[in-house]
Length: 90
Image 1: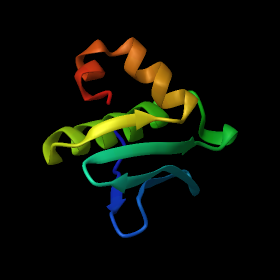
Image 2 (image 1 turned 90 degrees about the vertical axis):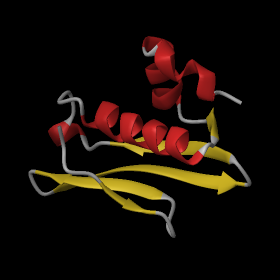
Image 3 (image 1 turned 120 degrees about the horizontal axis):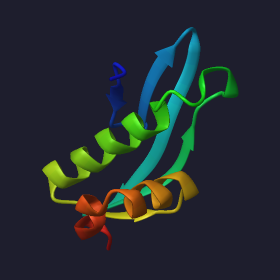
Image 4 (image 1 turned 135 degrees about the horizontal axis):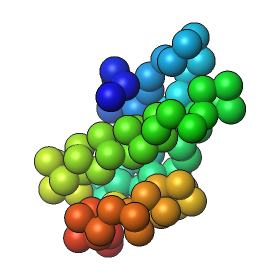
């Protein structure tokens, strides 16, 4: 598991892996989190970092009672692969 930071004021989850910044950007409108972008540089890709960022974002949404709108294609695919998060779609 990667050490992930959450900056709620910026709408961003981040972590640094081998000196590279990885992020998931979102915005909240009312009780809806829209996941906008997940970015992991290719130099550290394939390690499950995007999955960790997405899981933490979805767990945060669940904990705060938010519905999720995944505009990011990675987040869409992650939710398809992890149906335990399908109830958050809204």
